[in-house]
Length: 124
Image (cartoon, rainbow, N blue to C red; front, side):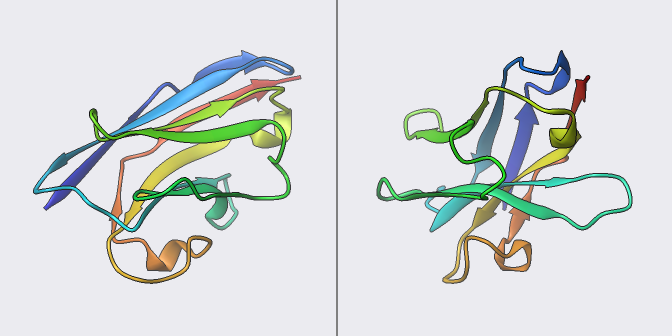
């Protein structure tokens, strides 16, 4: 079993920055990919960014390209999401996911493990 724990959310003004962390623990951890998704009230869970665990491949939603950066630290089994130039529309609960089987980085249904989520609120 894999446990994912997110941290780093909070309240920030528009234009500010936050860095989210997702630490994985449990059995030997070697996923295909790690991803960040977000869900605003009344909306579906949307893809934000993903990174392949074994390589350097990253992907981003168009809405965050150029502002967000995903990275990972093998030694710490941790994935990060650096969020810059935040906008009020980035407000959501952010979830970290791990995909341990072949599938799509962009589909939340293909992820097998999830963290509890961390709230990000961007004020205007």
